[in-house]
Length: 428
Image 1: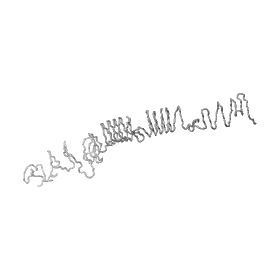
Image 2: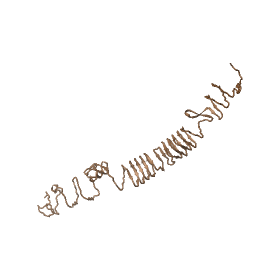
Image 3: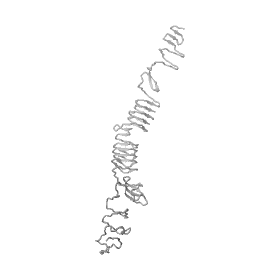
Image 4: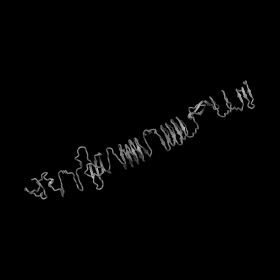
């Protein structure tokens, strides 16, 4: 018959066969579902080991395992096995820390990534609220895709980067670093050698206190500060405004070149403004724009196609100025030649002080010739003969200490006696 209720003294190890004997022996089995929850006492506790050789299915809400050690033979554990459709629950483990904030390692469905976090959520939640991200210490990391570092990335050993590396914050490297390609939008500080074998793009500050060797192109869109100098085997270009040619080493800048220390150049050429506090040029220097020099300048040869302003200058060799030469201080020239002047003409100041000459005023070395009218507002002393071929009008007193002779002998006044001789007729 079916079992209607089981009491502690009704299930025994007896082998009775009577109809009123409910004992169970080795040949008798309980029917399926013949023992239900109403036939067992509540909160049943079994005080010995229990072995289930078949599958164990627990269909309650919570399964509590209160053991010191839990051993699971299965190498693959499936969590959230009843989920269907699109994923909606966070999956992982939460560690209870008592009075401290719990920790968790879960798959964050909202971020679509695994996270190591601290959280105040309990184990009954299906989504985990991130209080903060927890630290993690690992032996090594391999990332097939991009790696993002929100804070400081500190590398104490050698770093080898074979692909692109993007750093939005500060990159601090204290050891040797070799990169085939590197890109950073934030500051990068390298205390030792930086070796880059591929293209490198920096959109912020690159500070290198040690030696830097680049076998490929270095592109910097932000400020580049090099305390140790530059040694470039290839071309060096800054935003197309400052270039250093690979083979010749020629330097071309389209903006302002400001040099605060001593500068030695065998050849210099600039199409923009160049300001030099002190400069020694041993070869040709070509300036397409304004050359402003505030200190003493010594040049063996100078040539400019634009305006040149010198507060003080010493030129020991030839100087060719293609446009205006503006000198604000005193200038001493041992010799000067102006190409648009004509030999034998007297030099005078023209419009706006320009040096020019005129064919109406010539000097042969011994005689001064004036073509046109000559006006003398004060005394005029002639040590030799004054020859006048045209009419002469004298509005003031004429004093002739050596006498007067008109047309040799037509009208004379003797020097000492004052005797007057008239070869013609006196008309009244």
